[in-house]
Image (cartoon, rainbow, N blue to C red):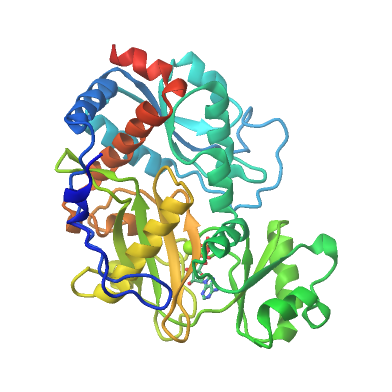
Length: 416
Ligand SMILES: Nc1ncnc2c1ncn2[C@@H]1O[C@H](COP(=O)(O)OP(=O)(O)O)[C@@H](O)[C@H]1O
Ligand SMILES: [Mg+2]
């Protein structure tokens, strides 16, 4: 496939910093030369599928509802239904031309409902109903029942939603992440003074530390621990709340950022475009106040626009370029198949470190009062909310039709 014309849009960076990241990549989408007419064909396929598919948008089931589960168990991941956002996604699909979209709860009735309602395609907007690795449960059920979906596969969803597992991948890829170790109370209380790994990892660093759940959200149970002496108690506290592994990490005192990245097919004014890179957008600085040492989540304080500073490739070229590089690297090297949002923070020397990846970033449709971080930079890429939804759908359908043909027989028959 001739790619020289495309490469001309992405000249080799002439400034590369010590970590090998450039600040000069062009983030504008360019049309990738694939089979001539493939994008036009995809547009027609999407139009047909929207008209013919029965689509389920899946949100987190509530374990307290009769029949949702057999036995109610503990939620190591703080539970949220995400139903309102599922409705935003469903409404957008309808505006884009879908004729039959339903909301469904992610619980043990899901398999039956998918069959009864003859669902052809699903959109995952769920953190699960209960149990460990709950982010992956509905993806696993869809794989098992043979329903294609927008969302991460079960393995990727589990890795991304377990901060320690994700950080080990970052380590292997040489992408900076704060120094860390994990602890589980089944090994007894955490005693840093006599812990060999603690000394190896932190090598004389005496704080501050972050103690947080490996599987959390919205800054819940994230603690700053200023001294080594206070770690034992902090680890025990987070463990009693989550009953899961605990992450002990070096505190990064610098500026905080987030950036979104998805596949290379995107919609701009409902016209599909393909770039030769994953699409990086909504690079944002989360503005912290003087007394705010960690970002206070939207569960505690609304995320208003004064708490977010949108970053541009021209106005903030250095940090923007680095965020783009890191986001593309994570997406490509981890073989991601759909949207994530990365959270990052700088150390005292201004070096960026990845804190975590959100496998199901908030996709709330912006309104006059509230926005979602992922949507804040859409207009800069010539996209609106419906373009974002169409992008995620189109990129996924293209991936399934081109690379997972054997798993989407139900869709291909709808295209006949
Ligand atoms: N190692 C760290 N150094 C500095 N701040 C941190 C660190 N880890 C977490 N934080 C702060 O806590 C917030 C929540 O942590 P994060 O890892 O993003 O988990 P989650 O968003 O899933 O709760 C971050 O947005 C950041 O402000
Ligand atoms: Mg976060």
